[in-house]
Length: 278
Image 1 (cartoon, one colour):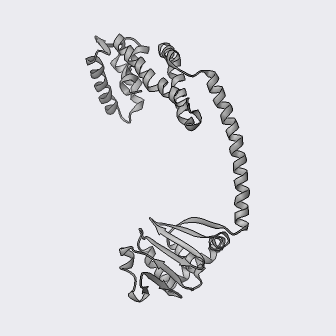
Image 2: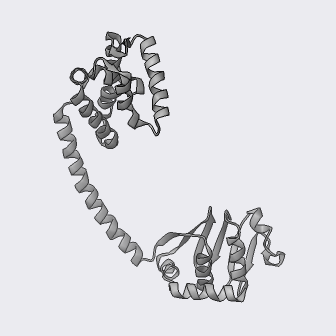
Image 3: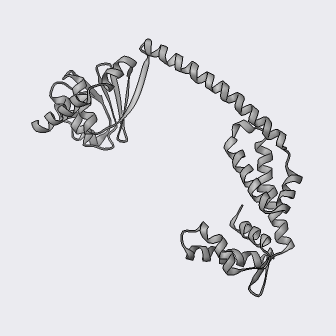
């Protein structure tokens, strides 16, 4: 419901309400009194000028035109949406629940709006109960599917199927990769100009960068020095995609476990060792 219709509803529920009381009712919606006063002033000006509300002295009253407008709002923006959503209820449960809460709250406050909703709703309480039953049935089905997926996941782990995980690409991750590489060759593919500008020419071999031994840590440091580095690393059955400060790792399940379970204490020691050497 728009702000104007909210004001109309308040005035309808409290005929003859004055400006200060009206402001008190709408003020909690705003961060500061100035914003509330500004919004209310605009709304009252529009509502009175369009004949949806009238002012008698310091008091405000809703007109027949205003009441009709509010009913149209209720019909078009709420009940008709509910009617449409209830045709395929399981596809948008959150919206249906939100609309039902609004309907019950406003219907409890204003009997005319409730009567309008009764006249135009194409669903009944029975339909709500049937939806509950469908949700319960679906929940049982999803629970069964979750258990089956868990079983298949365990079997794929036994078969050493492909797996993946994500890390933050930071100095700690650099030390983990360096420790895992065991000074064996690391190959990097990148078209990132910021990275390439920092790579020594003798590391470049055609379209790739290839390093081994102590140069691995130096290469990783270069990559880490470019926060937005885009590159793909290959080492010992592991593929690492660097992008937007994240490192997405891909390998067989067992290989990824070896990488992920690299002892953190060893990584810390490696980090300290590299710092002392540099």
